[in-house]
Every structure is written in structure tokens, then in C-alpha cells.
Amino acid sequence: MRRGKVMVLATCLGSFILIIFYFQSGLSSGEDHFSVGHWNGKQRRNPLQALYDSEQFEPSSIQAKHQMRRELLASACKTYTRKRRVLTTDDLKHLIVDDTHGLLYCYVPKVACTNWKRVMMVLTGQGKYKDPIHIPANEAHVPGNLRTLSEFSTSEINYRLRNYLKFIFVREPFERLVSAYRNKFTRTYNTAFHKRYGTKIIERHRRDPSLEALEHGDDVTFEEFLYYLVDPQTQREEPFNEHWERVHSLCHPCIVQYDVVGKYETLEEDANYLLQLMGVGDSIKFPTSSKTTRTTDGMAAEFFKGINRFYQRRLFNLYKMDFLLFNYSIPHYLQIH
Ligand SMILES: *[C@@H]1O[C@H](CO)[C@@H](O)[C@H](O)[C@H]1NC(C)=O
Image (cartoon, rainbow, N blue to C red):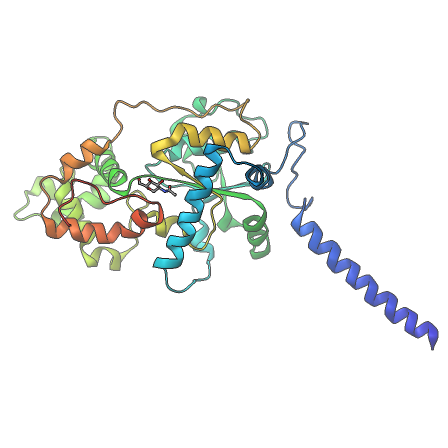
């Protein structure tokens, strides 16, 4: 009798210990998942812990800035999104995983994403790459060179969402949009985009198009591009191409709680801050891109000059969440007040 009781107690105790053990390993290092601390033989700290530890005591101005951005995002999400949706694997295609350092990066095209992918390749390359700038741009975009969170199982996904440092880079939405238009529709070499999108845009949104334009789709105007974006039929057919899809829809910032929100406007400073958190501030240099062809606010103003108020308003409504979530104000050149 007594023995039976002891046995039951022992088993209970045993399972109790097991649960605690499992729980703790899930929270701390989780050796079977990723090996913080053993990369290139150097001791390494967990970037997520580094972030929140460093914010505990008198935060520096850059730490305070990132704290404020995070809080603003959280409160905007609370105010402007109604019900919390559950993430599906499809939602995780833009989250790039670094198991070596414990990072998740959501890439947004037209926001230094080539350079961030290069950095992620160096970080995950186990020594294969040294300097991000030496990685050819097209190689950074080869699917399969980097892993995305959608490739993992549910428990692996949850583990990473809980324990990794999640970061994202955003940009003033209309500057990003003008940048996408210039890059995809005004460069002669982008024939794939002209064929796939340009021909369709011209067919639907140009009066009396020439046969040549219909065939090549290589002279889409900014105005026609905007008509295409605000046309309800466009999104009924298929999701926006990632170059003009809203960050809100690409990275789900109200469901995935990003720890660091970087901005294109302060790219160098934010990139260096992140590299330091990752513990690679001394060994990896973030590539600086040429500033000569960069789309600026003045350029965006120029592009929007000829657009009538009605379309300006509809376009603003389309991108509104990106303005609100990331604290961008209504562009001064819009006439929608
Ligand atoms: C939001 O933007 C305003 C105006 O640009 C700025 O003064 C403020 O510091 C920003 N807030 C955050 C949290 O970034």
C-alpha cells in the first residue's frame, strides 16, 4: 500500500519535473533548436535578450527611439485593427530565418532588402561569405539561399517567434511606391515586369493604346500605374506584387510583434544598431547603397503633381495602414485635407 503511494508520488513528481524541464529549455537556450554561443568558436549572446537587457537601465537615445517606435506600432495596432487573426504558413513567406544568431527578418522590397538579404547570407553562411557587399545582388534573391519561416513546422515556428529577435525595415509608403514604379516600369531592362503587368495596365487603363504599347507594356505612366492599384478588380484577381504590396500585408506587424522597426530614412544608424545587438557590429559592415538614384520626397512630390485629388485620396486610403502603423504623416504634397 505505502509502496504504491510512493510510486504514484514519484511518477507525479517525475512528470512535474519533466514539464518544468521542457518549459525551461523552451525558454532559455533550447540546444536542439539553435546554438547560441557556438558560432565560429566565439561566445555569443542571444540578440533578443541583448535588446531587452540593454533597455532595462537608462536607455541610450537610440534605444529609447526604438522603444518608442515599438510602442507606437503596438498602440496603432490596437486602435486600427479589429480582430486578431491567426497566422498561416502563407503569412510567413517574407520572414527570413537565421538559426545561428536567433533572428527573424521580414523583408520588404524597395527598403534596402537586397542589402539585408546579403547580410543574412553572411550571418547564416557558416563562414562561406565574409563581406555582404561582395555577394552579387541576384544571388541574394535566389529562393533557397535563405530559409523562410514558412518552411518550418508549427512548433518550430512558434519557438522562433518566441525566442528570436524579429526585425523589419519600413519606408515612407509613397516614396516606396514611386521607387517601385521607377524601378519596374521606367527601366528598359525590366521586360518581365513590362510583359506581366505593363501590358495589362495599358490594356485596361489607357484609351486607344497603340498595338506596340499593348504588346510591350514598356511605357506605363505613373498615373496609369495608380489607376491599376486603386482598381478593385486588381486585387480581386491576385494579390499585389510584393514590390507594391503594403507592409501591413507582407509582414503582418500587428500579429508578429517586431522587436525592432528600422526605417529607410535612418538606415545606417538602425542597421548599425541591429548589427551590434546581433553581436557582429565589428565584423560585418552594412553595405551603403549609392544615393544618386535614390527616390526622394521631392521626387515623389513631382510624380504626384499630375494626379487628381480623387485618386490621391483613394491611393492614400489604400496605403493608410502603413502610414499609421509606422508613424508617417500625410505627405505635404497631397491635396486631400
Ligand atoms: C512620430 O512622428 C513625429 C513627427 O514626425 C515625431 O515627432 C515622433 O517622435 C514620432 N514618434 C515615434 C514614436 O517615432
